Figure 1: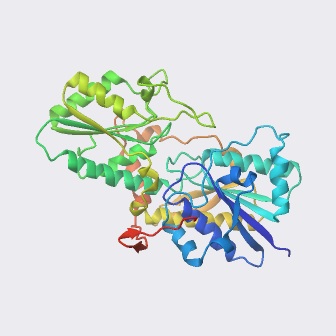
Figure 2: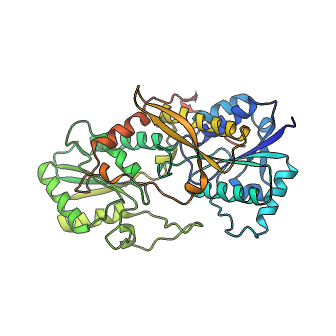
Figure 3: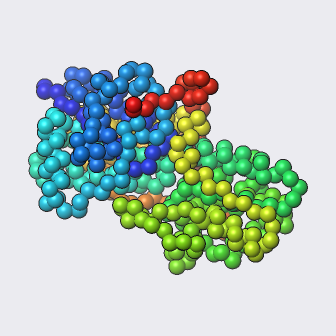
Length: 407
């Protein structure tokens, strides 16, 4: 049997464990030297590959560097937000597949979220149309946990752990003074509130802060919000509120757009930020009490030292399974997770057609959101708790974590 080469890339926003999946792809490829020769890494995803930017992993990385990938944040290979054309007549497709042929690529593995699965789907369709033998597989990645047809996505568990721990810290800090105050924490989440929902884990006891949690799945009413904050302040001096960046009113307008219009990215998505600051000013003006807003921003996706060991291990497993799927002749599929709870939490890998995943979004189920729209239920807590378990112990150097990075 002739050996073929693997090319692997990373795309979209990084997570704390996207490199763990890369590690899984590399190690499983190296474990199959009878069928796989070289492992190429696309530098800056499919866009970089189109521009002839790629590396030979065996030549570029030492064994120590490969091991460090498991506990290195960001995207080691670099990322991109590049949308392939809708029309297969576009010259970019034959150019990509010519590169596959020139490099002896038999397996294409792409680690990413919704838009990355769109790339996997389009390339696999083109491969079928042209009778190409290249196998194309997607590895899920997103802190937003909004990929469909999978119990959860690698990256979410670590983001949930970071949010829960950090919001708990904020709650502790906010409560030191015996004076009325409101703290508004803005968290990531465009249309799906999975990250913000995880803030409920910050509570140390029933009715603890965060007192109010707002997800983008429910319409947001500014007047009701102010009234709710007022009622909470009457119960306790210190009130912490968590809001998704994507909360919107009944007309579908994002609250962050009340202050300024948002730009869009290459996929036409609104670039959201600023709803926390806007709400801070509203509460200050209407209630006249001390209020501040905190935007956790990119730390939600790159805080490696607070990543979940469960998340790391599952990300590695997803990368390994992706290589096995290629070797089994699968293509156009995404690795997905199936949960088993009967004898304790366990995740099994399976495959889902990328056509059913790309450009779709999984929202928090309605029955996991309180009828008031100001929090989540115990069912959500039971869902998310297993995902944050286990502590990452990174390699340390000079008192700081040691990471793997391209020179």
